[in-house]
Image (cartoon, rainbow, N blue to C red; front, side, top):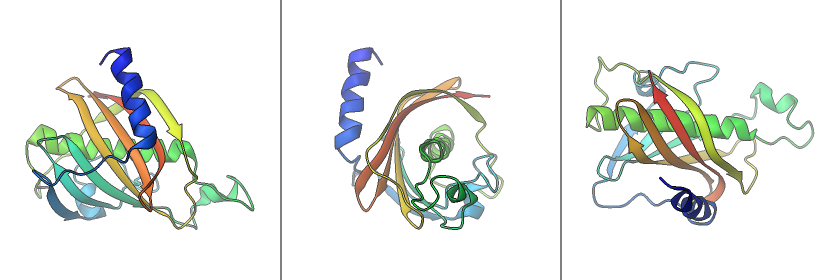
Length: 177
């Protein structure tokens, strides 16, 4: 992806909600127990609660993450006016991206009982932006689109939505280990 393409994508991510296309999208209903089989994150840092839809053809996934009002992070960010930290939103996007990588690498929308987690390290946030606050009790819908993916690395765009409004967006790079 060259710089011009990246700038165009960033502009679009800020303003246009990524849609899950009808053709090729498979509705799924995967829970935390299923997600634990495909990514290595664990409590208290496992942020994805459900996977709702996967589109292998277009490299898209939709997941959700409930922002627990009792999360300890709200004690210090910001007392009296709590806001879910941007870094946690980016981490949620990254975890959703690893879920997408699992489905792409296995060329399936099924999480098998013997699945093993995708191991990856996010090495770069090419861009991150924040349009609206995510508040305690919000249910974040996270949509990730794979831009590039091979055995070595992945590049993906992502959005966090609350009530169909873009709260944050990013372009992330992951190195698969």
